[in-house]
Image 1 (cartoon, rainbow, N blue to C red):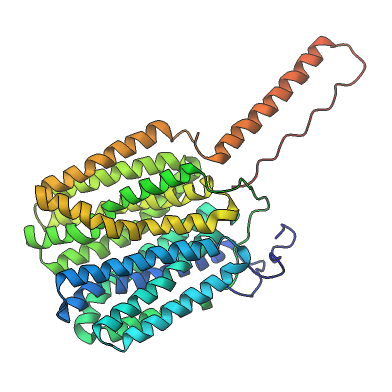
Image 2: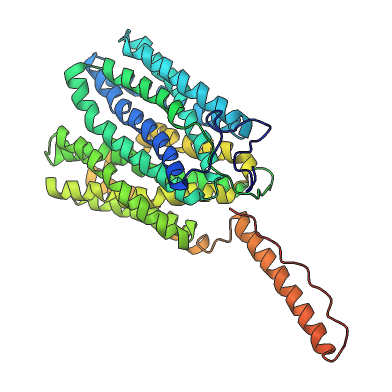
Length: 444
């Protein structure tokens, strides 16, 4: 793809969500395509994620078997993001990835909509998670390569927050009134709509940077992401229970706080995306980890329904800062030829946290109680956040930052050499030797 021919494709084929070519349409409208994709997918997650344990409990499934089923679904999602992300490294294969994952997920949800026996239902949900999550690393890899990638990524996250807020707001009511069939049927339709609303690639930057494989620093970043997402596990699984049964707010109010908080993430994502334009991604991520520690601490101090709502809503600051900074760091650390794999690993962090997190968070809360347990869980986040701010916020780690420093040093040395030569022969009639044109920094 070139600046003069924005509709050019790689290998003679469009490499994103279909066969239509990019035309000279307003770029702001094109950003909304990414927002639509994340919105549609997040509605599906918001509908299905809280539904599964509630429905299995209604069907008389024991707590242990429910936990096994949820672990199996999370494990399937983990494998899906890694596998499909690896395939999405190839531009030419991303269109096929999206077709296979959305259609495969839709078929699985259609099977679940028939209300089969519980083992078959769980199997269909495992199958859905073996396909559907794969659309996200493929989409994020393409968004990260766009000319205005940071702006597009913020729209991507805004769509996700809006969709999750909508899904969680209606799923309990629909389950109570109509059972699971309309929920799974709607989920299948929404996945198929992704194909209709995301048909063309975003305009990519002209220059690519090839640095080989995935650096070790990325794996350290992925580990930090998993540790941070234990906060998300506490927010979704344990803090609403704390509100409902210890503060006596009731389950309806406790789950409604999740929907309100998700809606408030939208302005926070927009705010931090603007901050990121002038700031450092690592610095914003360090702040987000500290905000996560603050979130756990203030929730431990909640005492009534008003404080419960306010403390839950403070998570919008946490997710608004973390989502935009962490997704930006992925593209800074990893070259484009490995972006699919990188975003697959990045999105696999949440399934890992959902499997391991209950063991860590649940055991801590069970042994220390909710209030002291939440404060205890926040301590590692404080240490991680401070470490990031002290060691990574200057941008010394990412490859591109090192390359900028190297190029700037070379240019400065050339200027110094030229200046010295001119000083030694100020009256020479011969012109100074031409300097090498400054290296053009590749677009991020």
